[in-house]
Image 1 (cartoon, one colour):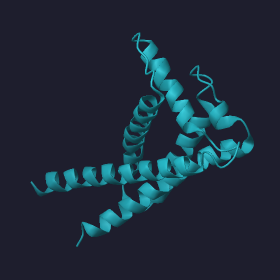
Image 2 (image 1 turned 45 degrees about the vertical axis):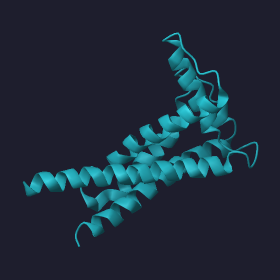
Image 3 (image 1 turned 90 degrees about the horizontal axis):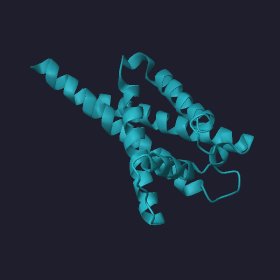
Length: 157
């Protein structure tokens, strides 16, 4: 019984930390996206991806505010789930895993839009944009690892 409770708490910690990382990523992006022409616009990429997905169901979101909100919600959910995987495995390599997951997400965000039929311009139109995109995802992953470390300490009290 104790093992199941500990495992459930561990999963909950992973999800909470993943949510923290996803929120950090979105705050970083939202606060910087209009600071210059080379800033990543992950929101535009997400909106395009959502609209193209909905087209397969003969649907679309016409209202820009609703599209933005739906995309932001999807970003938070998907990034929470992705970042929560950083907590799987031992605590010895937590930050190493965070760096690997963050770099993988960032590089994927920069390199996958084109092959997926999406416009890569919002995240890859300059070297600065590419580097910042990767950096944003890395920052979210490191926030996740930091929260996991803190949550791990609090559960030992």
